Image 1 (cartoon, rainbow, N blue to C red):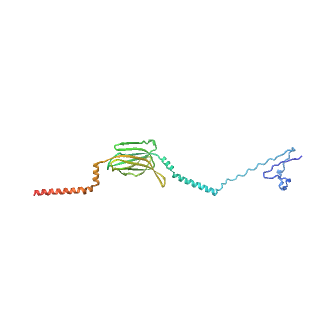
Image 2 (spheres, one colour; image 1 turned 90 degrees about the horizontal axis):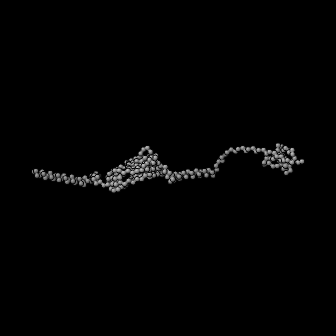
Image 3 (tube, rainbow, N blue to C red; image 1 turned 30 degrees about the vertical axis):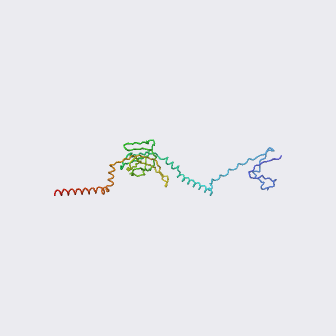
Length: 278
C-alpha cells in the first residue's frame, strides 16, 4: 500500500520535487520538516501544525519633516489669521460691542430758564457711574427760573462735555475732558451771559471717549440736551453797562463841554456881582 504524507511549509517557499527538474540542493528540505510521522491507518492524510508567526517588532514613531509645500501652506494660514484679526479690529461690529458694554450712569443738568440781557449765570452738569441701572430715576424739575434735569446715560472712564448756545457768551469754568468713576461725582461748570433778547437755546452734548485704536479715537455721543431760555431786556442795567463800557467817549464828547460851559457861566456871574459891588 502506498503512503501519502502532506507537509505544510512556510509561505514563500516552493514545493520541491525531483520530478519537476529543479536542483536537488533546493529540493532538500530540513530534516525537521521532511520527517513527518506516518499514519498507522493506510489511506489517511496527516497534517502538521503551522508554527505561529513571530510578532513584528514595533516601529518607532518618527514624525516626518514637513515638506516645502507644507511649510508654505502653514505660512499662508498664519498670515491669513493675522490679517483677519487686524481686519476684525476695525470692523463696525467691534465698535457696537464696545458701546453696548459701557455701564450706565446718571447725568444731572442745572440751567437757567430765564435771564436778562447782560446778566451772567452758571450752568452745572454732574455725572456719576451707577452699578444699578434701575436706581436711576429720570426727571425734570423747574422752579424759580431754574431747571434741574436728571437723565440716564452711558458712561466711560473718560468723558467730554460741551456747552453751546444762541444769544449767549459761554465760558467754561472747568476742563472739558474729565474722568468718571462709581465713587466720586464729576462736575462741569460754565458761565453764560445773555447778549440777545428773546427765546434763546442752550445745547449740551456729553461724549464717552473710547480708545478704539492708536490713530482712531472715537467720541460716542451719549447725552444731548436742549434748554430754552427766555431772555428779557433791562433798560436801567443796559444804561449802566453802556456808561461803564463807554465812559471815555462820554467824557470827551459830553462831560468836558458841559464842565467848560458851567465854569464859564460861573465866572461870568462872579464878574457881574463884582461890578455891582463897585
